[in-house]
Length: 251
Image 1: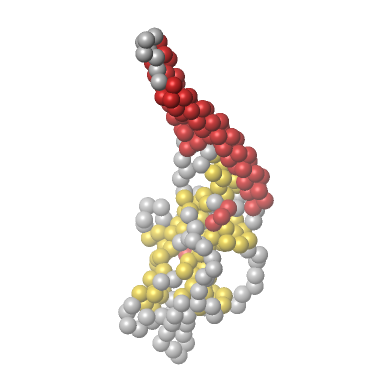
Image 2 (image 1 turned 30 degrees about the vertical axis):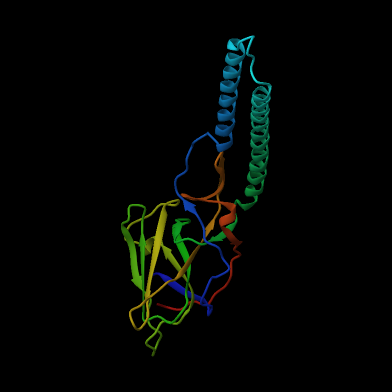
């Protein structure tokens, strides 16, 4: 049975920034700085070719104007400086990326909170935390897999003797046995929380998940923490979670 636990009476998870979660990763090896450097070198070669052609074909009786020649040399110098600057920037970014990779290793084995409706199956279970900002008449829950197929659907029950579902923060924990099909560790699932008030107006829920970081990946686009099939940046981590004891209610 799915377990939904109210973890607090708070009605918002504000202060926790949004997140970018991806399940696929580009393997491109071309950085913006490398492209800029190549372009600068190309322009440099073009400039030299034009300059040499002008000097070879200038008339001894009507030589190239000194001001124009000086201006062209200034452009040449600027291009060389741009190439040097791009090279230094790329080395700096490479050094920063190495530092990010080193710092990212400290997250391995840690359970972190990120603001997303996606999560990954770990130890044959998934979890989300969601905040409902106001009392709701109905709250429907749907979980889909990467193909968009529903693997779980349910609804929160009204309070005993009441007609509304209290505003607050709740946790949703699902085991493999709660789903319509068996999932495998690493599989990515998404949850949809559809809440409505007494007037039938939609209530937007803030959704987070807790996942355990199991590896780090890095390429020219950045450094990513990995939890199962999910990749996310260090900046997406809101906090590191420690196991807490909560009082559960039957739903």
